[in-house]
Image 1 (spheres, helix red, strand yellow):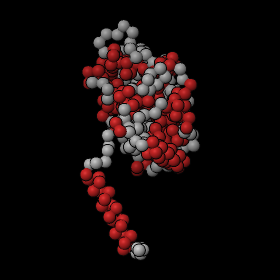
Image 2: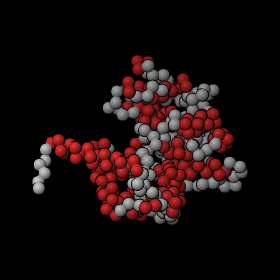
Image 3: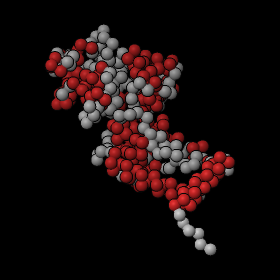
Image 4: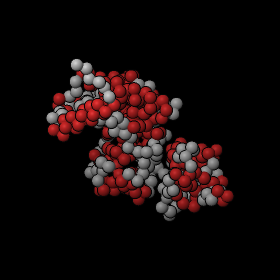
Length: 346
């Protein structure tokens, strides 16, 4: 006996299979327990699919050069606070609790070599569905993702001592109450608040306490974008934020002095571009943060982050004051302007 295939029968067969699938899902018989794991072929297929997806999307959605091999302290600090528990680290085993997930997080020291820089960037930036790997927590911070890619590349050959050095001091020597909470800050900013010589970490020693406190509150609330700082700030209570602000503001570092008039934009701005002078806000007695003594590389990077992607029209960019101001600064003036604004008062 032969069955003639007709369009009607094919449609009815497809609908019957869909109905059976829905009935099976409704029954609750499908095992979703992480304790059961995946079949070996299922595990292979899912991982193979993920690798293919990362390869394809990274080819179209990532820049050609995405890796930053310098200034890795902030990446190491973020890895320590947010990634180490799942993936382990040099000298730090992976948590057995997190290894009970399905799928378990891989040992990155062994697996990063399977991916190109662009693929690593895409995975860190976008995360992986149906796993515990989240997307990067802050939009528009590809600079942070690039530093994380540079850090991940170092993992296979990184000794525990080097990892410990990068993670930095976790306590203030002889510190009283508040020392443990300040460990979230000193790992990157250093016990002296000077950023451990890293170009991407600002000097916060001597900064206005109100500004430090407001920054921590904004990072914790997601109002300021930085996955590194958001992870650090959300672990602090209001009292601990105030303690951190008081502590770092009391250290010698930045100075509350008038900016030198060594660059036209610092002194006068650009009237034709409706660009106010830096000295108008960054001056003694004003609420704006102190700049004298700041790291010029950090200031230049922040201005470029505020400017945003040059391919995106202004109407789609943030309208907050500093973002608007930064977009009015000519690109050719940014580095010189940062040098002038950061120059210590004489």
